Amino acid sequence: MDNKDYIIAPSILSADFARLGQEVEDVLDAGADWIHFDVMDNHYVPNLTIGPMVCESLRKHGIEDFIDVHLMIEPVDSLAKDFADAGADMISFHPEASNHVHRSIHAIKENGCKAGLVLNPATPVSSIKDVVNDIDLILIMSVNPGFGGQAFIQSSLSKIKEARELINSTGKPIRLEVDGGVNKDTIGLVAEAGADTFVAGSAIFNTNDYASTIKELRSKIS
Ligand code: DX5
Ligand code: ZN
Image (cartoon, rainbow, N blue to C red; front, side):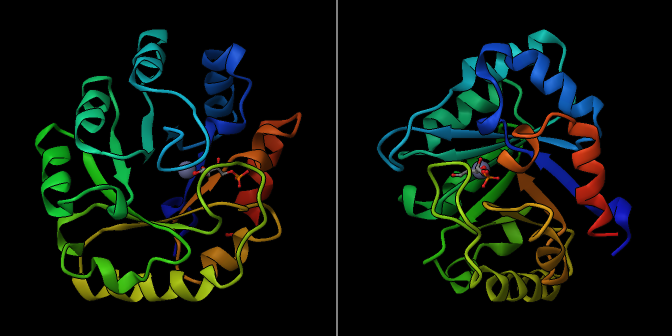
């Protein structure tokens, strides 16, 4: 795959929330492609983060780039609509968190957003094969959702390959994103397994020079 087809999506979970607008501007100026926006409800996952008001605030702050919302919440539908109204571009959710996955996907799309499904480490790729033609992105979790800074689960690599085969079988431009423990040591393996979209939180925000970090990450996948 050509390097320009790769998307780097810094997760703002590891940003300084007291200066969020500036952090997002800085990471975009440093060469990030998307902003990955982690939403946790202390119910579906054991942590609590930010909601649609913060997404809307980023838009009002002047952020025009692609906002990739990762919902780790249950239920899905009502907040998904709120995020669409708040300016999200992509909304992804965990199928376990919706009683009617097909309905949730189409509700997101009817609200003008792209829709993605997220697979936890124990959730098989086969579980989404009947709806894969309806989605714009598969997100493979390479850690258990809930926290930044965890170690990459190596068995995710075979799952990324399986998801790539499923996507190729559709012939559609569905993106394959990987989230959790992506850093300069793992990003090359993740790309080799077939991913084209890379979430990195601590690997970017825990460094002083975002531009050189993003450049280094890109150098591993070019
Ligand atoms: C975890 C989140 C991730 C997290 C990744 O539940 O979905 O987006 O921020 O953090 P790192 O890149 O530090 O593993
Ligand atoms: Zn995430």
